[in-house]
Length: 40
Image (tube, rainbow, N blue to C red):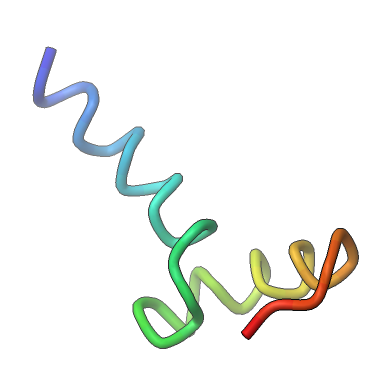
């Protein structure tokens, strides 16, 4: 359960966390979030 949740949560983390956490993964997410609303 924890092992399966780990990767799933990890993928969701970068989307919620700022680009500072993961510039590579957040880069795409940041742009996507920017469309929805202004991000820090």
